[in-house]
Structure formats: structure tokens, C-alpha cells
Length: 540
Image 1 (tube, one colour):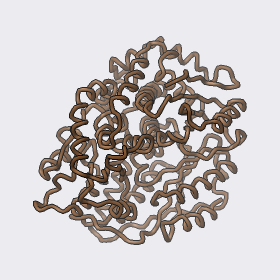
Image 2 (tube, helix red, strand yellow):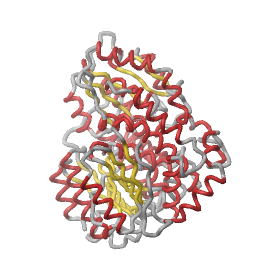
Image 3 (cartoon, helix red, strand yellow):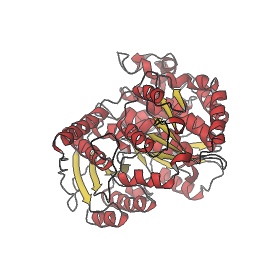
Image 4 (cartoon, one colour):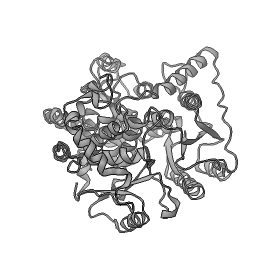
């Protein structure tokens, strides 16, 4: 939250930014956001008026700090060694960012985020923990999300219980009145945390969805809130030039309208985990109605000549980190004429400030783009296709085959300016897999000079999946699936984790095709880095 961000470009006033800033000030955008005026985005209040609780959530949270600290102490006294979050998208990504950037204190449970249905990933977590000494957080705003409920059923069977109920090893985080809240009561969960219903999932990191895990990890929550409140106060400034959230949102939205819609996130290494959270926030909030902002996270860095005119770079710089190499790279980008914004964090607890800044900025960018940043109309299409696939499997005992053409040599030769590649990998994430995919992204970016992204399935369905189907038709998608070495049964369900994961991949493929997207696929005989390397080496 240090130095003021500056937009730098050889063009002087890129994309008419000054005019856009004046327009937002004249239209009282800041005041209308704080006044919760839904007409800033759409004429009707549906999925807007009831989604603005994040503006004041820190006030609500401060009143609940004693119970959060008491709960954290209770978990420590109970002797839990691990805490596992069973959740998807906004219900888990904020906690995952806190885990990666700040992490658990030495004398607190180690946090694991399980947001996958791949049997190898589920089994890997089960083999890492001692279920008797693990606290499971079943996290879902709607309380109906398939993945965490299936994972609950699996881990419930692993926890010894004389009464046969889930008992003290389970906690629910959900909205009031949801099926999950009822399940938690029936199964006598250790605790149920009921979140304010007026906060959407991807805006919920500073609510129970992020702060209950923070309390378990021993994170200094008041310090996070203090930084968030400092930013919140700055975001009340009427002038977008003095309002950090309004300024960033105006830059994002205005540049996207001018074709610079590939928002490329660059960070100091200690805060690289922030990218996963902000990726979902931007993609799911803005990717709709045939427009949007494409967040590009974790892309290998290239020389300036490989970047097109569709880029906007955001550098999240942690003060006193090893930044010399990245600083020099950003300078060369700016010297080449690429627009770049630098946001400086004084320390890792400035995460609180950045969470609020980016939420506010995304709301402003939505107003600039003329879309509702609080709904996700295209997410349901993949869910419906998955449900239909599973219902057919339950009737026939067979899963429909995934028929997707393999990408041919030079398959991106038709890619035009402003297009991007998205790798959708239904594979266990590992350092080796990350390295292989990074090498492929680097090769594609150099050869075709387009942006590249990676999403691990099924996590991305609750993140960038909305953008893929609802945003501009600029994506080229490679769906990577693999045979499962061994499967895992889901208790009380007629399908396995392997069938569920395959159905999710198939459902998303059907939804992408229905949206007219350019889709190709690779199926690996094994879900390892060697098989992935071989397959990608054969792709032009």
C-alpha cells in the first residue's frame, strides 16, 4: 500500500484514461457504489442489490473477532494437526491465498485446500493426513455445491465416530438456511459459521470464508482488517485519481474497451499466491455478455517484442523483496510502450488492503464495461451439462465418451491479434506439471505472440469458466484429460470420483462447444508429467 500506482506508456494518455476518469467523477461512481445504487451497473437490482455486503464486511467481522480467536484456540487445544478446506472457487481461493502468502504459524494446524475431484488428488490428501487429527471445513455459500458435498461424504467415512455422525472433526461455512447448514446440524458438526447472505463468493475473502481458515492458521486477523480498512477509507474518495480502487478499476475497464483486455499479473515471488484469487475475481466478474477482462497469471516472462497490443501489466511489488530482476523487466516493458501499473505492498499483511482494492476496482471496471460484476450467468451451463452426463451414467452405467479433436500441428496459425490460449488440465497439479505447462506456454507465446493461461480442472470451472463461455470469443482451448490410475468410490453415490471428474470435463466441453468456442483436446494414458510432456511436444 506504499507508493501511488502510475500508468506508464509511450502513448501519453493511453486509451483516453483522463477522459474516463473525468466521466467517472462526473457520474459520481464512487458515491453510487457506496450508496449501493444498482443502476450503476444494470436497471434491475437482481443479483446486485443483494451482493454488496463486501463493502462493509470488515465492520461485521470486527464484532466477531472474539469468537474467531476463541475458535482458533479451541482447535489448537483439540490437537488437530491438519485443517482441510473442502470448497470450490470463492469458498476456498481466498483461504488458499492466505495459506500461500502468510501460512500457518508453527504451533497451528497445517492448512490444505482440497478443490479437486480427481481421485489421485483426493487420495493424496487422505494419505497425507491422520483423519482423526484433522479438522475438515465444508465450505459452500449455496450449501449445494457438488464437489464439497462429495468430499464430505468421503472423509466422513474416514473419521472414526461411535455415534456414526460427522461430529467434532467437521465445520460448515455457508449462508443461513442452506442445505449444508441443515446437514451440519443433523450431523452435529463442531461448529457452523453462517456468513452474511449479501456477499458473493468471490467477494467473500474478508468474511468467514477467508477468516475462519485464517483463525485456524493463527494469522493476525486484526492486522489484515486494519489494512483493509485503510484501503476502504481511501476508496471513499470521490476523485478516481485519489481513490486507489476507482483508479485501478478505471484503468482496467478503459484499457479493456480499447483492446488491452489481457490483464497480466506480475508479482514479487512471496506474494505470487495472490494471482489465483484475483484471477477468479476478475474472470468471473467481468467475463460476460461477449466482453470482459482476461486475467493472465503465472505466465513465463518474455522479452517485450513478444507481447501484442492487447496487454495491460499489473506489477504487485512487495517492498524489501528480491525485486531487482522483476523491476528491470517491468522497466523494459514500459520503455517498449507497454502500459504497466505498479502496486506496492509494504509487507504481506497488505493483502488485506489488496483484497479490498481489487474488489472495489472490479466493481468499477464492471461499470466501465457496462456489465453486472456480481452474477455468473454462464457457470450454470457447464454444471447442467455435468448433471445431465451423471444422470445418463446412473441410467446406463456408462459415461459418454469425450470426443474432442486433437490439436493439429500449427493449430494456432489462425489465431488473430487479441486471441489467447487456455490450457484446461484435468491433472493433479505438481511442480513438474506446472513446469511442463509453463514451457508449453512460453513456446506458444513466442511463436504466436498471444497470451496464455492455465486452469486446473475442476477448479477453473468455478473461476475462469465463466469468462471462457461468457466473454469475447477470443479463446483457443486445449482440454487435457487422463486415464485414472485407480478410482475412489464416493459413499452413498452411484458414481466415483473418477466418473465425476470425467463428467465435469465432458460437461465443460459441451458448454464450450455450445458457446461456439474453439476447442481441441488431448487424452493422456497416464496423469503424469512424462505423458504430458510427450503430448504437448507433439502440438505445434
